[in-house]
Length: 362
Image (cartoon, rainbow, N blue to C red):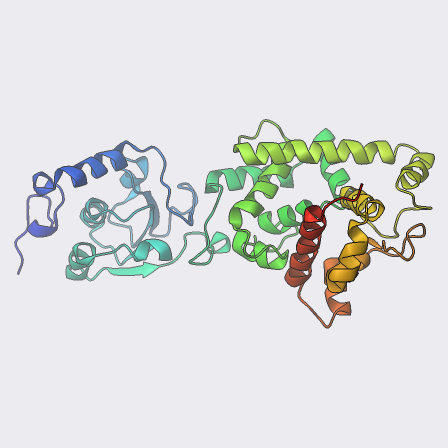
């Protein structure tokens, strides 16, 4: 039987008794962790006030946190929000004599060592992986750009949006901004489970761009709707971009004759059928590419990419003044041998990159 220290822990596993045995670098790391006010733990699990009761307690991985005092003899399961420090495991075991399980998110379970497992095994406490809020649990390799508290705050804002902000939100949807569909899926606004950002990458054809790209768009929409929300520099820039695009579209739709005038400025008899206003900027780019010869070169050298742009924007060299019907990425994929939405978007982006790189004829 292993000897126990004054803290009730196995002597060689007690970080309190052995803190003087750590090297200088390890001691510095521990101090930094103790002083850090935030816990960057990858896929966040739950807020502290959500999972208390029925023998279940969520505790934050920070010394002296108020959630630690919630543990007592009635506690059967503890979910650790953050890194599973050895000192925290020890404190949980001391405070919870009838403990049965310690729960960690999957990414944190990888950090366990024998120093974590041994004291739990002696108490017959099982270490399991899971999430305190399964409906917000992301895949093991997913990450959350926003912390969970911001997620709840933004979700509540969108669920109760009203007044001028509701008008702005409806306007974005009417104009066909794809970002609004991402926001609806991400926050589960239609009553479905929230969709993690990694899955949004697949659903909207942005695989390979990284979750930061999706996060920037989602937070950019929130920032546009409510400038008081705090976000990073890139979402702020994206919010400005949304605002500029919306203002331009508003001017086009002020009067019916303005729509006709806008089409005429592009050299068109009318705008393509079903083309979302959010895509007007890209249509303008195609018109300019036709005038300077770049679109004709794309048609000659990359006919497949040219065809995708024609289907997407209802605009082609052969019928330049009478636009055809614009199509969604999903519809184009069905027309082209059932290609995925992601693949169509990739080809579309390549096509625009080629047009951008082609030299402009004088």
